[in-house]
Length: 412
Image (cartoon, rainbow, N blue to C red; front, side):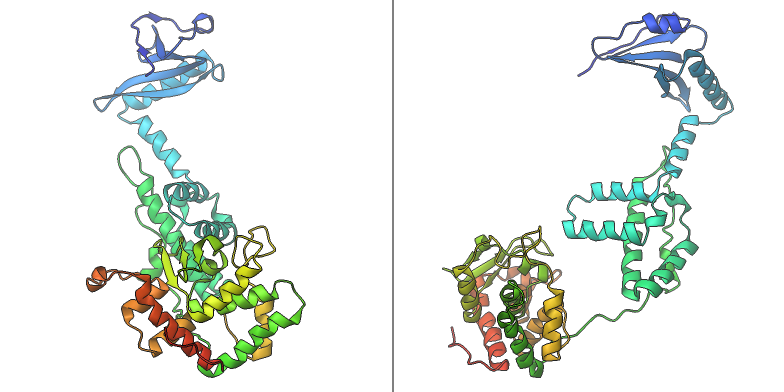
């Protein structure tokens, strides 16, 4: 631990005195001015700076006036006189300076502090937050957060809703609300006063101005599945893209597992156990690892892919990431060929809808799609054994096989 050498020696601080005073080998030492009480030179190895020490409201406070030679002796002495003048009138210049610095905190600075504090954020979430900052709030990044008004928030919400869509507007302003809630706790003066007392985004809640966005509920209906399946299989035969076969298998995997798109896209062979007929997703949305049993259909799909695998990813892509990125062009071809409009997440919703129609246990279904069962006391006593999920997974798979017009497998 560095030592501190305090000295009561007082001399008139001048340029020559400061220049010839040596740096300490370690710790810090002080050379106090004989003309102005509290004014001193602070020395550390390789650094000299001017300070002022004064009792304020019963406590000794120290403020750094500037480093030498960036600031001269006389400039530092004049600055010390200004501080002493404020103290003499009952003010607390240190608190004033702190308050001024806090008021200058910009939205961009608060955002970086927000990311540093939220250490558990997923890379995709960080990417989405940065994208919103660089697009929707780009012109606010250099603005002090204390200057963001309720009127500005309401206008921005409306602008985003008109130009990018109502769902995007709600998402962006909820992110801003979270960021400003963080800033309210993170930034406060020496007196304990918060930089902002009221989150301006709260105006949207108080005036009920949030857009009413209905949750998307689209699925691929049973009568649409045969045409959709045929269009997916056609990708394997089009020969236009070397990735068409991979994309077809990826879409079928999503439908037959209910996995989220990134969970399936980033699946590695090291997480697929063909001997025990399971796959494991380690990095899930709710941070709880998910192990799923493989139905007979999925076993056939994975065994065929494993036989020709050249990548660590089950569904490799041609980009820098190494795994498959959402295949928009091929999905558009499937929609044209089948006449069925769908999104990647519609495949997960279809899996869940099929499971519910088969009266799969609510607990088993939640395990299969890795939904948390918070607040459910009974769920806490149920062991999430992958073998207990094998029968419901096979039932879902057999239903899908029958619906698309193929012969179902034998019961497990």
